[in-house]
Image (cartoon, rainbow, N blue to C red; front, side, top):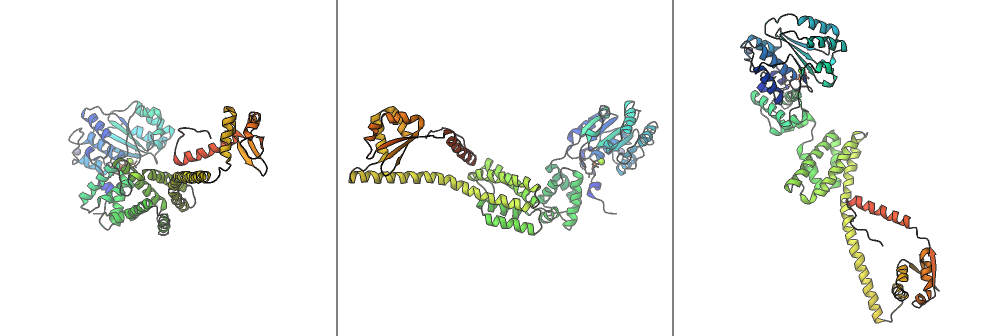
Length: 483
Ligand SMILES: Nc1ncnc2c1ncn2[C@@H]1O[C@H](COP(=O)(O)OP(=O)(O)OP(=O)(O)O)[C@@H](O)[C@H]1O
Ligand SMILES: [Mg+2]
Ligand SMILES: [Zn+2]
């Protein structure tokens, strides 16, 4: 016997074999058991989810020689012919190539005849959304006055293109994509029936790659068996799908953890040279990172990272996600990926800046205290030398509160023969009034000079810096201290 593709060989023959459409199956079974089935259905959903298959099973339910049943025998002549697609009362019409008014007219004429062999004539109109407007109108008339013993099933991948007038006369079922796990189990069943060896991980990859369609999954499985030389193993499936082997992804994550930028960049280079699709690779890395993040967050540690890496992990994922999107519209995606890796260096630097800031503060304060210590020592050992800050303090104290406050806002410039108090124009008078008292504390004459302090500008500049820091460290302002 000629080789038969899995998708055809394993087309479900009963409702119970249909994968992933539980609600639809249950409703149809009940409808038949309770003899409450509709004369017109719409089966909507993307390719390879079982619309045609379900329509055929329904045809068997209505025409099995054992009687109308939700569990057709599968052995009588009618059942067998329906399975083969040669049953004379089952019409499979491809609306994509018979979309005109004439085709529907022919159908309308046909509905007036009695069934040839079975109880019901079933019209399965595939790609029903392709019908012309006239054809829909003609069909509508038939649906409005349904002749007895005719069932219409409109299968479509584009429900929105079916006119509302038609929809309102049909019972609509939405076929949904099965889960990866359901696809996996479906593939496993086929392989077990075929007695073909497999690795679970390989099946998982095939299931993931089938994008929800069972026909695609079965076809892919066909290819994988051939490619793997009679078995389905991880290595050949990875190769077949152009997927980067897991150990390479693992190594990449390990290097990320170690922040080994150099080797990471080399790795990208190598994959590119070996002809791997870098976007596939990147996507795998993203998936793995996500898994790692969730694991680390929920269980305290993943395969490579631990709880203390979480901030870094989020940061990496953020950068890598952006790179993935950017690379899509970039002539040389490799550059974007390399750039993303280079950006990671900033993690180190960010941490460094953070440390540095803390460190710096310590350095400054220790320098300051050393300096102060030195100064006080000097003061003690030698004659008390003149110190501007001390003079200001003393002068302020003697001149009174307001002057003291004004002096605190001033800066002092020392020249060869005088001291100049630089202060905002508005404070000039206050200080001038007490200039005599102030002068007593200085060894040289004192003069006041009014300047315009551009408050707004200064403030703005500082705020910009604050904003930068806030952004870098994802912080927020808790208190605001005036200088
Ligand atoms: N729900 C399902 N359960 C098990 N196998 C399925 C299912 N859906 C599809 N298949 C497999 O895919 C093949 C194609 O299914 P079917 O023709 O019913 O899809 P369809 O929804 O009509 O797709 P299309 O929109 O392309 O016509 C079947 O022969 C079967 O092997
Ligand atoms: Mg179909
Ligand atoms: Zn039967």
